[in-house]
Amino acid sequence: MYSPNEYRDRANECLVKANRASSAELRTMLLERARLLRRAAIQVERSMFLLDSTPDGPHIISSPRDLDNLKLLLERLPLGGSLRMTTEHYCGLFSGAEVENAWAASRNIADQFGCSAEFRTDGLVCFVKRS
Image (cartoon, rainbow, N blue to C red; front, top):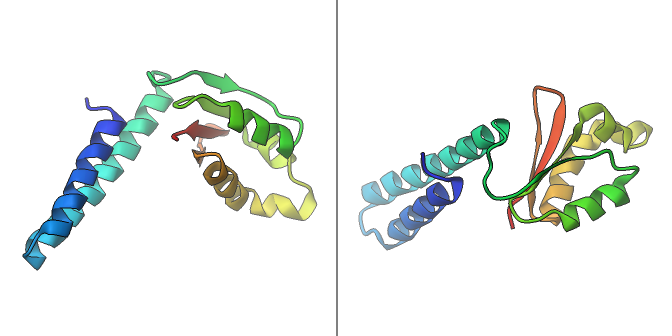
């Protein structure tokens, strides 16, 4: 199995080739291939994450006291590392009306620190540091 980074590299190569392609049909095919390779990278990353076999970094299970503490943990998270917490605990970091916006906030916080965020079906919220 390829690593997620190898799929992303192949997708980037397809995008470069699509930019240079003279035929609209070839360009469309290469863009579709790049889209599929990026999707494959995400699926491989999720699979590796679920298996706890991500070779890039440590997995941290934490219960931050507040949003500032969460941001500090994400800032210190090593490249490839992941931070996990229960969905209930994550939503508890937000007050009353803000709880409804917890999902949007997770994406904003993740983008701010070069992470991806995911609400998993097993009741965890996971942040994975990508850059």
